[in-house]
Length: 378
Ligand SMILES: CNc1nc2cc3nc(NC)[nH]c3cc2c(=O)[nH]1
Image 1 (cartoon, protein in one colour):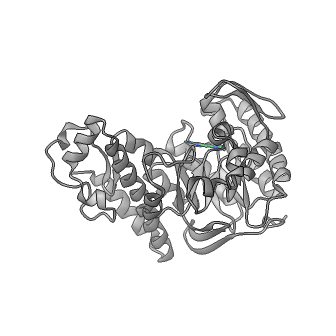
Image 2: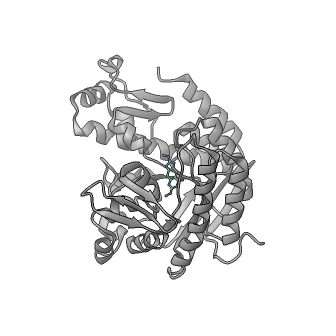
Image 3: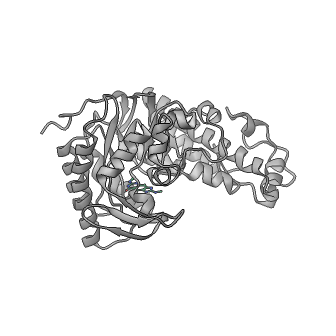
């Protein structure tokens, strides 16, 4: 069966270097350059940052969480106010996840049945039911450019029987998500999510099942859930080759700069992770030479900036001693500066990756980047 059947393809492959790819994904709110890193704006805000800074740092697309937004302020209210872009002021492409993953990690009294996930809101304890149909309805109300199917993600390690059950349920939910999505206007996309845990055969079954249903793009889920990096990379090796080359591949919840470089090398086009902003709020900076924990007393008298060659002003101008002080004093500005410095570093890394692939020198970029990280911060 032609894997590109049925749905229009808004992804244009511009170049490859080995299994690495660079391309452009056209959405109703703008173009996304790939490989792309999507900063996570969980509840309609990028924690500690203005949208202007997210854009200036180089992000083309941001992620919103269905679970949070449907509980507060509600999808219907955001729709009545013109949709996520109008509501938040971020007027570029947005991807929303389908909510299932957050339910499993944030709410209690949750139950998974054939029809839906039911849970109690972590905000007010209200009983909520999230079915594939309701998840798609919420994402359509939010107006996101890229919606995700409803799936069930199993944390690792897990029993084979549980991984197989969740993978097969996710395939049935993929069918239902696609049927519920069919009324979306042209240009809006729906991605399937490959499950199957750390079991190659189940990964193959899931990928082939999703391709047979047909989606605008394909996410690899069920990873970055506690498994070693080697297992994550092995599952990408098992899965990516089964996905249509002409469609985008999105590795959910990943990751560190090292994870991203390894996954790009294996054919992944899109990433999302809370790490840059979360680590920033905890005083940890990502730089060209690895991570720097500004809580460490060794920075107390250091007048140097984090990286005097950085493209980002606060990484080039703020003394480590000042950042250390802000972090130790618990000043909000500390979280703000480190969040923007980290988002800017991630986007700097993605731009370097895209340029290297386009120029056929990804291996050299890969080696030099890893050597710089290993050099560490001196
Ligand atoms: C929305 N569905 C969905 N989200 C996910 C988010 C993730 N975030 C991580 N690590 C931070 N792994 C993930 C897996 C999934 C997954 O398998 N499915």
